[in-house]
Length: 481
Image 1: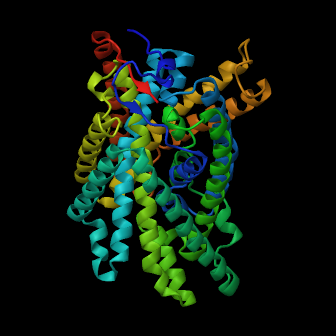
Image 2: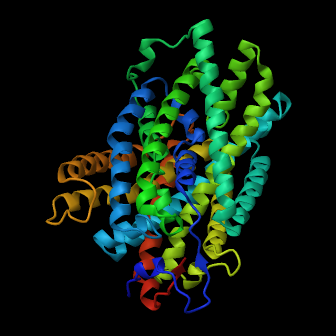
Image 3: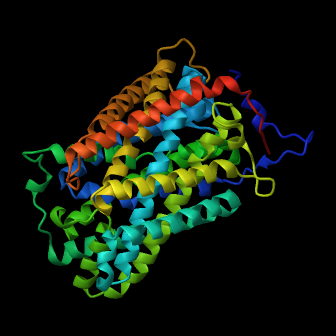
């Protein structure tokens, strides 16, 4: 198996007429991309439903996972710029198979996660339609039709290109800011005018912590996203200068928004009444009615819908670059590395990702007891697969720290050791705890069977593509302007 020379992607050329990837992402685009990718309101209700103790889990995760993640992204993007992100980093540090496995898990996670975004979109849309349509939130046929429609739309937008798709990402980030500001603003108003029923006891570890354990993995999952821009590294303008500042600003903003949104849900609704699909609009509706501004509910739902669409677009566009690079490396079918002749996007990878996401939506809908249970199962599976690449990311920091050559990096040995160790341990713990069922799960054995079964299936499929398919093909070449 031959290695792809990633350096050749970066150098412009005029020797042929092959289409190129465009550098269209600036610093402002990256900050908004990080916010819309990292701060996902759709995971907050499933976390807040476990009570005030999750606030401590947020703080622990921000310190031991999110901060090390920012260090790792800046360090690795500096050492290995180029398209591929977690795929490229693991490949360069640990070898071809580890690179492929890292990228594969990152991609397949998003094929599971994107359907959860679709389901969350359904929950928000139904709530905005009014009480008479509330039953549609758990109607499988309606939820399936709405999810597929949004999936098709996002696939088309990303095929047209990041030059267009980034505006949906940016609009989604703005929608996220507005939705979060309304949510937190109403929460502060309620607290100042009426106080809160949340007591200190709500922030203590419960007697039976089983259902809370799942939240830790989901929280780590919710904090993933700083690496997303590096997956599209060859589409960033001046990445060495642009990326570090964008990581810092995007990270700080996202962390503050997460804690604020979780506290607001607990104040407004209470953990026992939070719906994992409608918790955000549920809280806003309750608070807005209480303070006499019910008119804000519909605009808020529209802003939240825009945010959800931006989240789906950002992750679909970013993760599709993984099979694109794997196709160029010939570990997956070479046609996945094709660039659209007009839009210059990895259209084949995007189409395949859309089709597989569609299949997974259908399977989980009809294998689960309801829409909310399907949402929680797909979310937990996505957590496991998403965090696997971060084992490689943090292990790479430790390898650099204990190696002989630190001259090619940005950080000192002590920083790499602390961030690498904290990040690796936290990531491994998050993966293990994702196998504990959340309280929305009605059948534990079915949940565990799907968790272990799907995880093993995706890992074996990765081994097949690398060790069997990859030996049969020769790597392709791609060029970047």
